[in-house]
Image (cartoon, rainbow, N blue to C red; front, side, top):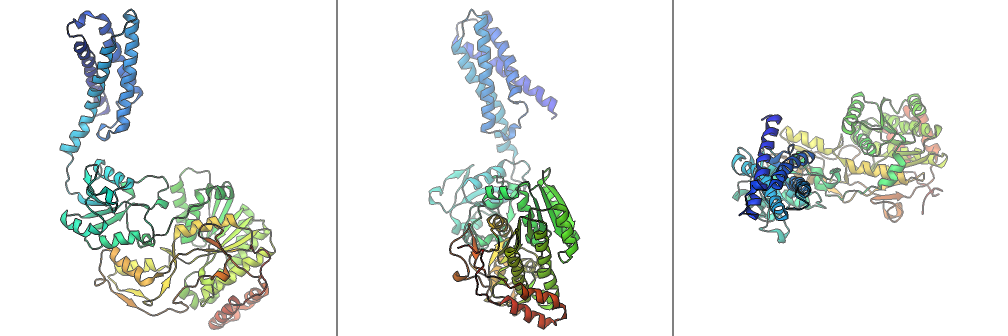
Length: 610
């Protein structure tokens, strides 16, 4: 049906309803009188008809999709009809010697609302009951009968374009909600009942609709879901629901990252805005996992200009296109720059040309086994690259320089960790003699980053297994990429100069447990996808070390952020290495790096906070 045809039919229908409502009301109130002999009433009918169409257009009653009508549409109907009646009453007052048929107008108002509202809502009722069919939709169980679950149920039931999922019931651990109903769907049990409910109600799909799950609660639900053959999806977590809305289009598969259950970080928005908004910010390694996420986080605060610096052409192109598409029309100038941190002249040229106020230095070689075989490249990129960017920041008066470091710099046993520790020493040395605020931020592994175990495990599962784990007892500390990046951005606002910020990594996770969870989330059993142990790789630790209480100042300087105790750095240690590192053998260079990284100093840094 065209818009013109639909509009004509609605106007005709409303005209009949309005005329009928007024004369029916007059007959009910004045059954013994000849209505046609009441000229004021006839004039009122004409006036009401005219005013109804005027206010119908004002409140867009002819433009609404009544198949999805709800309270908002009912309010619009009441407002339009009430104003129409008031306007018609004024006309009646003026033409009837200042008299008003009050009772007739009140009854007209009631009939008007009932008939106009009923004519609109009857289509929705008819469509929901007789036209909407289940078809081939998958019977869906919703976990969580809270506000998010209710929104998902409503959207699944009312969305004309939803041809996949049919909500049939809720489960919720809140005993007060048992046997209650939301949108005609009953709460039929608790989480532990999921396997039985799936069998009894022929459930094919499960949606976890609890965005505020914490500390292992999601894992308990997933364990019960994995006892069934139903596909499992979930709504995004609270930290990802930036708009505050839950939509069926946002449903996603449960990822192993979700099972961490870490509490979302609350950023100091005001401090970051003051620090970032309107300023030029430069991110090295902007195409990498952490660098690209730092760029996404920074864009929320509308920097005046963001410099995406990286060596890889495609990775910089990708993040450049993503930011432009994701943030659309923005006041931020996005500048993609191809440049290698090892190229000192190029880095100085970039900083000189754009004059950034803040630099986030995320460019680094991070793969532990690869760096064991290529220590010279690790020195070039991780140490010399850091030194080039840091000295450019000092030369051109950058306000703040934040280096992304790693917990592998704590008592390093491998080349990667040792080069990152030496890079920290470079930053600390610069902090002691520069007006620029130089700081480093340490954290552990990030789930989903390139080179992490998750992409490798997923690929092995796609190939039918086995999954290779180095040792059954090996553990690691993990964060998600967004959490780590947010804390890096926040740490920049806390910088006074010379600090090594340490992020709270939570509890260690056994790699074999990650592997088992990923197998289950991929829809397989451990019999179908087996786990094999390959032995520790070169330079790999069984357990990652975090700084002890004597290595960090007591108390958080911000949520999940601590300040490590630092010592005065002897720059000659790393300067002499950089002068002659190319002459070392692979083994010799590794030994020298570890010796420098483990050198202890007795004097505490003068800029250290108490």
